Amino acid sequence: MKYRHELKHEISYGDMLVLRQRLSAVAKSDPHAEDGKYLIRSLYFDNADDKALREKQDGVNIREKFRIRYYNNDLSFIRLEKKSKYNSLGNKQSAPLTAEEAQMIVDGDCDFLAKSEKPLLTEFYTKIKTQGLRPKTIVDYTREPFIFGPGNVRVTLDYDIRTGLCSTDFLNPDCVTVPAGDSSIILEVKWDEYLPDIIRDAVQLKGCRTGAFSKYATCRIYD
Image 1 (cartoon, rainbow, N blue to C red):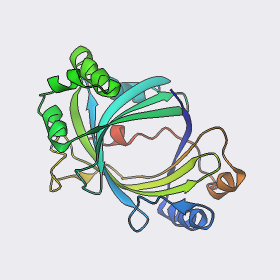
Image 2: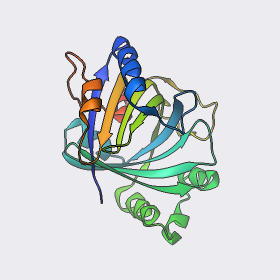
Image 3: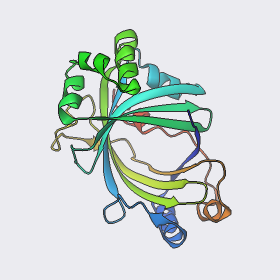
C-alpha cells in the first residue's frame, strides 16, 4: 500500500483567488475537469457508533473510511473508495460500481459484494457485516484541481460544501442538499516523495496553518 503526503488548509475566498492565479501559472488543470472544475458527490458510510466520525474528531492517527463517489452527475463512472490515513499520510483505493450496484448497497442489498473478484469490494462487504457500516450522509462540493508532474503533485481548491443531511438518495441529481455550516474553502496539497519548491512557494499563504479538515465531519454537523 503506497501512502501519499497530504496537507489541508482552510482558506478565505481572497486566498482562493490568489492561489488560483498562482497555480494557473505553474501547474496544469486536471484534464478531467470541465472549465477547470468539476462537481463531486460522495455517500459516506459509518456504523451506529459513528466510528469514522469519532476517530476523526478524536484525532486518531490510524483510521479509515468508505465512500461511494461520482463526478459531474455522471452515473457511468461510480467508484467505491476506501480512504486510509496514517498521521499526515494518506492512501486511496477504489473499485468500480455500476449505478444498479450502488443503489443495491444503499438499499442494504449487498450480498453480491461477497462474490466479487475485487478485493476492495469483498473487504467492504466484510466490514458491512462485522462493523455494521451503513450509508450516513451525502457530501457535495465543487473542486478545482491542479496537477504538477514532478513529485506527482495534486493541488485542489474545494468549496460550496453541501450536506444531504440524513438523505442517502445520492444517485438522484435532484436530491436536496444544504450548505454545511459556514462552508469553508479547503486547500489540499498531495504529493509522493517530495514537494517541488515551485509548488511549495505557490501555496504559501500568510497566517495559514495546516489543519485536519474533514468534509464528512462538516456534513454531519446537523445530526
